Image (cartoon, rainbow, N blue to C red; front, side, top):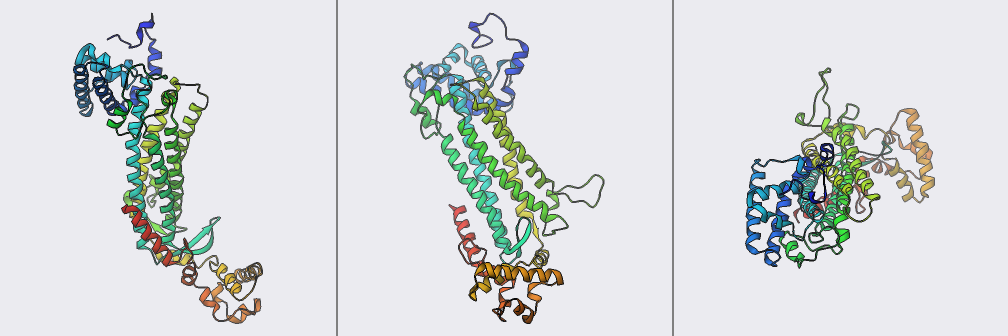
Length: 459
């Protein structure tokens, strides 16, 4: 075999700097087992269709299986001068079976080969991502069930707004990560199409059986346009976009955990094994895992924009620029999967300080909206009720009182419609219980949401 498989047209050796600059084997070798899997399916098809002798196909498959074993056992020697994972395996195949190895590349190009490898690889990654998302969602449901009676302030603008069940708060994140799972399911469908047989860009003149290869590799079908098939990286963009939204949600969750573990909030504590200390301040317990998840979000966004930028100016069809799809993809995967696992550990291991949450509910006049709603039930237009309660809140702020601490006589000074039954509207439990609308924070609705989630997770 010539040093370069494409060397026949060239009269000079490749410059060493060019070899270094263009080599991708140092990262795309992680596709090796998928490359072999695709090559075995391709060789089997070539033999069955008579494009190459069946005995040659069997020799090739046997050689590929030997190489596969060496890779799995860590004995395979990777060579940077052979550019990429495909050429390394092909060179090793020549050593195993001789010149017959050259027949493997019949009716195939590295263009449709790498597109197939990445789809096979990403399909498995998506399955693992969905598994870890499911584990995180389970942890949120378990934590919600454990805290069905805990009330904490709900916030808007990071200001105390209305009381909510802590279980309702956890289930909000369940909904976010459920949407993420649906997105990845869609991306899997988009990824699960076989481009092999498209060759370099125009298809192949050989009578290949594309459906046979697709079926053996577990694809649901084959691509419909050879030019699009070798240049399409939309499925990777979709994966990176879905991962970016996961990190939006992971970052929001991390931000709240970081706030909640601070002394100013004191709502939760996190396991020591998921925190670190300070090199100078012995009292510190830092939520570094949550902070790093929040911090790594920028990298994930950057990887998405890297690939979008690579793709946006490319003419048809394959261009070497597409080699730049893998490093942002691999980096996102290597960041996403452990982040999902660690987020699950953070949720499963956190301890709730119910008393501190209850104490926080005494600040900010959380049941002011309930008082306005009370006046509406007495026949007052909401905007007028809103104004009256606003004046009452201002009075309480001035006097350092809470709404439920005001005597009935004082309340009546602001509206004669207020009666003794108003105090039922000013309790935290009453406020939460009245929000029975579907999707609301009332215990009965939150229990239904948890039950529905459990059914979804069992499906």
